[in-house]
Length: 358
Image: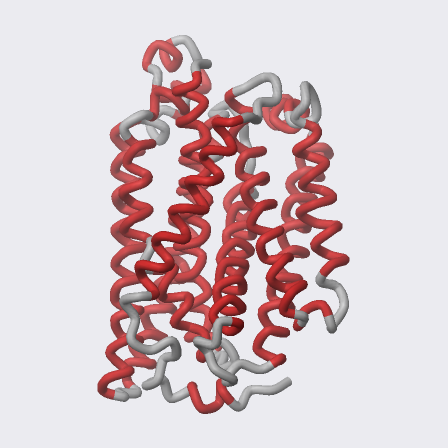
C-alpha cells in the first residue's frame, strides 16, 4: 500500500482516539447525574470542555468518510462481487448505509452533548435546580444511545478494517478503552489546572484518589474484556475468528501485543495498585499520560495489522501522533478560554462536592 493509504489508516487511528476522548466524556458526565455522585461535580466543567470537541471531531472524520476505498476492503464493488461473505455483509457494509450511520452517530452525540452542557452552564446563571433533574433525564436516555452508537461506531471504523472477522465482544472492548481515555484526559487536565492554581485549594486528596481509583478499575475492566475476547476465540477455535488473532502474533505485530499485555495492563495495574499511588499527583499524571499512549497503541494494533502483513511504524505514524496531541491541546485551550467558571457554581451538589471526603 502507498504512503497515502498508510497515512489514511493512521488518520483513522487518531480519529477513533479523538472519539474516545470526546464521546467518552459524555458518558462520564451522564454517569455523574444518574448515580448522584457528588465528588466529581466540582471538576465536571472539564468533562464539558472535552464534550464540546465533538463537532470538531465530526469534521475530522469527514476525511475518512470521503476516502473509504483507501481503508475499507468492503467498499470495493469488485471485491464484494467475488466474495460471498462480503456479499452477505453488504446490506450493512455499504457506502450509503455507512455514511448514514456516521451522520446519525454524530447527530445524537452532538445533540445530547449540546443540551446537557447547556443546562449545566445555564444553571450557573439562574441556579434553577430543575435543570439537574432535566440533565438526569437526558442522561437516562443517553446511556442506551451511547451503548448502541459506540458499539456500531467501533464495528464501522475499527472492526470492519478486517471485514472477514467476527467478534461479539468488540464493542465492549472499545468501550473499556474509551472510558479509560476519557478518564485519563480529565485526570491530566484537572491536575494541570490544579497545579497552575485555577482550582485554588478547593480540590482535596480524596478527589484525586477517586480519579486514580476509577483509572485502576477500568484498567482491570479493559484487561478482563481483552482476555475474555482472546479466551473465547482460543476456546471456539473457529477459522473465521482465529486468523485475526494469529496475525497479531507474527511478522513483528507480536511486539505490539506484548506492549499491550505488559504496558496497558501489568505496568498500569501495579503502578496504581497502592492507595498512596492513587492520590499521588505526579504518579497519577504520569499514569494518565501512559494510559493514553497505551490506548493509541491499542487502536493502532486493532487497525494496522488488518491492512499490513508486516509491522509498520515510522515517521508517518509519529507525525499523526503529534497531530493528535496538537488537536487535543488546541481544542482544549480554545474551549477553556470560553468558559466563565471552572466549577459549576449553580449546581446544588457543589457544596457537598467541595466538602467531599472518603
